[in-house]
Image (cartoon, rainbow, N blue to C red; front, side, top):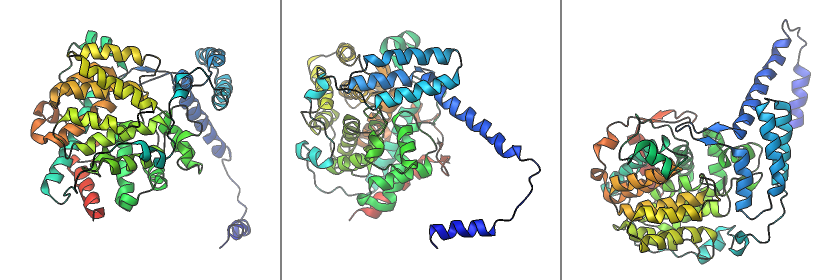
Length: 461
């Protein structure tokens, strides 16, 4: 039946009714108004759910566009006006200002003096593949029991890292040191709620359906099927997909946060399903990354996917870091940040000395941007040198988006070194995995591990 026929039948079969309480239908609009006002307020002022760290996405959006080489100074009066409307709880004016701000962000002039434009942008996998350097290994035996145990250790480690980091994300190294001293344990009773793993599970669901032929479109549809809401880049991507804007456009349209950490934080799953095959892990990460990110944001997911893939076949974490950096094209801005961090690691014995240099280099970037967190990963992996506890200690102390960073890097350590290297002080407080995914609100970590192993084995030749 054609669309017009469906509509015609609906009209023809409709019988008049008299509603006793017609206004009940319209009262629902009050709830819609409250929802939109609440989400708009969060855009201007919010606090991270797990750690209470303050956020201002409106300011961060302008900051991010400045980072990507655009003129933004003329937007400062808009930010001031938005702050004033927020303080007065003038929601009508705040709606106007926010719409104006988003419109301006989409038509910013280039800052020709910005260093951003001196680097090569990567907008397609084919262009990336030509410039990247991937080590090659023989086929990895995914049928072996060792594979299943490594996947479980990787997932458990990731959940541990996320649980530690969720409570302390969004603060500087200095502030964390002053509050907690040396962090070598959970700073509170941990829970497993974390938005990072939410999107990895959505990827796994898509991969389970299509295997290595999975498309960005399928991943995007799993997002809207399973994930009710996101934050920054991911929330914008969800809105885009819901209105029929599919990847890669969903990752960059109306999205000033497209080079933030949101893709980087989910690279581990791509490495897990491509064990010992960093090029394939990178290709899958590209497919996943463009759902919500573009440019260097996608490169961040590749970086994490590569080092997790390498953890199946290499035993020296410092070599893994070096190979992962080399898998990033040397003419990209992302490479400049991770290679600089690596070079400083080689030069200094003390991680705190290296980190002080990193903090100066990325000071213009938001703590949720990919670069500060990629540098944090390099520092923690290098100086942690394969030791689970020491790596977690360093990644906790450097601050930034700690849950994303900790979860990703210790996934690699769990895979590389096995379950026996994860102390019970980390695993004993962890129960089942809690999520806010539709239909998957709670699952055992063993179930998630078995799902991953089964999907890989099903689609491997």
